[in-house]
Image (cartoon, rainbow, N blue to C red; front, side, top):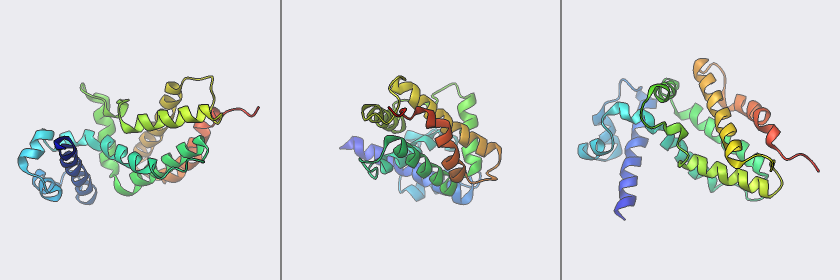
Amino acid sequence: MARKNTHNTKGKIIEAAWDLFYRQGYDDTTVEEIIAASGSSRGSFYHYFEGKDALLSSLSYLFDRKYEELSSTLDPNMDRFDQLMYLNRELFTMIENSISLDLLARLYSSQLVTRGDKHLLDHNRIYYKLLRQIVLEGQQRGELREDLPVSEMVRVYALCERALIYDWCLSEGDYSLQQYGRTMMPLFFGSFRARPK
């Protein structure tokens, strides 16, 4: 029971922080505002985070929450390739509508220079678990190629998503991430569909 409460407190802090970052900007958001918006305490904040900068690596938590939410909306009869494309569209829509481009760029740059955990590559994340489940089911149902390991297909899918997000950041958001992803993800990942027999 205490573990769930701990998870909720950390999650509330992260969600409040990213909401404030999006609305006010990272530099104009204080730790005190994050504490107030999350309904937590100063002690709780510093229990989980060394400071505001430590929250930059928590964006993967928001992505995982989105995937967790989306997993319950997946149609079990939908082709698994189509499920992956649906997840991508929904994630990119969330990013485009609620994550500051500047903060997304900061996250990517922090992952490049960090000596600690590379949160985006943590295969224990919900993101990777859900992708592995969908790809495995796709292989079992004959919808995705069986001649490649699940881990390799998941790696390529995640690589394609990161590449599109990275390019969108480099381009300073001058196009719709969601619309471009809708076109490019099927092209990038399409060769993983099972060949007709």
